[in-house]
Amino acid sequence: MKTEKLIEEAIKIRDSAYVPYSKFQVGAALLTKSGRVYTGCNIENAAYPVSCCAERVAIFKAISEGETEFQELAVAADTARAVPPCGSCRQVMSEFFPKTMVIHLTNLNKNTKSLTMEELLPFSFDTDDLLGS
Ligand code: THU
Image (cartoon, rainbow, N blue to C red):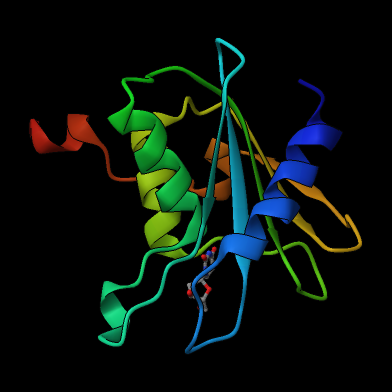
């Protein structure tokens, strides 16, 4: 799938966002190595911290379906610049994405910033750190 199409999927799924509190719709579209696309939108809760970002919804949907290999991710929101993912989402991405995987951050004008996982979250905490020295 072309990146352009993945970005369009991310923009489209924003319509499903459940955002009664922030009114800020975010969409994500995750392309697997096998060519499947898992989309996600942000889902909020009256207990605010329980809310889940669009990126994590897309990733968790894919992981729960048994997917393990990912190719590209697109994230879209109605921001002035390409939308920067929150820190929690960057950490979750780093658990599942290779350091060279490209993540496309965009807005409704399709002003897009494409970064590798390593650029998005350098020096990240990972499983090796749990093993100690
Ligand atoms: N949000 C996302 O879904 N992804 C991001 O990368 C940034 C923030 C959501 C969380 C909350 O529902 C709303 O945007 C406002 O923070």
